[in-house]
Amino acid sequence: MGPVLVTGGAGYIGSHVTRLLAERGEQVVVVDNLSTGFKEAVIGAELVEGNVGDAGLIRSLIEDHGIRSVLHFAAHIVVPESVADPLKYYGNNTANTRQLLDVCQTTGIEHFIFSSTAAVYGSPSGGIASEHSPLAPINPYGWSKLMSEQMLKDLAAASPLRHVTLRYFNVAGAQPNGLLGQSTPQATHLIKVAAEHVVGKRDGLAIFGTDYETPDGTCIRDYIHVEDLALAHLAGLDYLREGKPSATLNCGYGRGFSVKEVLDVVAKLADKPLTIEMTGRRAGDPAVLVSKADAIRDTLDWQPRFQDIETIVSSALAWEAKLAQQPMR
Ligand code: UD1
Image 1 (spheres, rainbow, N blue to C red):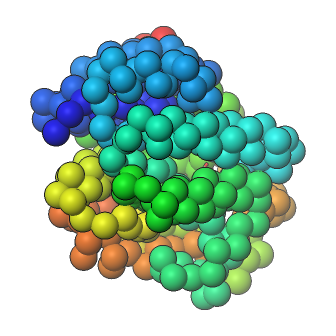
Image 2: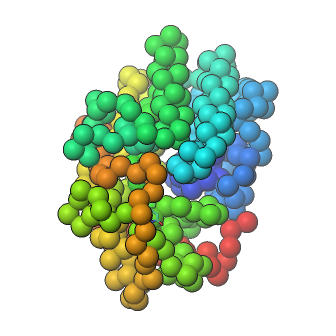
């Protein structure tokens, strides 16, 4: 099996995957520069502080630990920031991934799991994206990930490395037992922002656009529970270890909720009305973005377990309440 390297393992999604790997007895080495991640979020693994673009560091970690599999999460993820500062995204997400892949090639890494995004589809026609839909990002974040996908695909064609690329839809929620959750400062994601409002960290929140061509005028997204998403990474690793071919798969549930529907669930579970301002559209937001989600079920040994929207929101609320008492370090 061999130990695994997890980049960005102190971040939101990487920390959930790290914990699950450690829980099933795997040896995990995390490399994270702690720019948005937290030491405390690394459970059951060795944490090395450093950058993915530091080829010398990554090479010595791989060689010293005899690592054969890499799970690559380290990235910037805020879409509006990517529009304002694109080179930050091409530097950290694309150029550093190239460095990492270079080291993976020369050290003979066999398995690579890559965190990609539904943002590679831009605004798919009809709002539903299958893995075969046109790739047409509408923001630098999406482009920075698509370029990395392409490098990985080309490298896999030219070398023994095999990959599973997972295109995440809207990741939300927290570890079901309250051990981990999203702690990112200055969060922009809808459910996280709403949860911060519920615990009093924000006075209110805005709905960005109520004039979309959707039943209630607000954007529709496919929200996936972070624990299900994390389990998909473990299934992807098992798949590669069985010798199966590279695959690129959507990670969603194949169903959508509007911004208003999500906020109604938040208000119901919080048992109080939210202070909501209706504002104009946010740049770069497609009206509808929902996955076609059959391929992941057909390819990996994975089934959704936490898809109920109330389960997702209640775990996010529980985590936010815990964080308000006990901030992450
Ligand atoms: C985006 C990416 C997604 C990526 C994620 C990473 C696109 C199309 N999607 O998700 O692939 O993985 O970022 O960061 O680029 N909203 C409000 N008020 C708020 C916050 C959000 O109304 O305070 C609305 C947004 O306008 C959007 C929906 O809620 O319609 C979800 O937004 P958000 O949670 O920020 O995620 P995406 O932008 O969909």
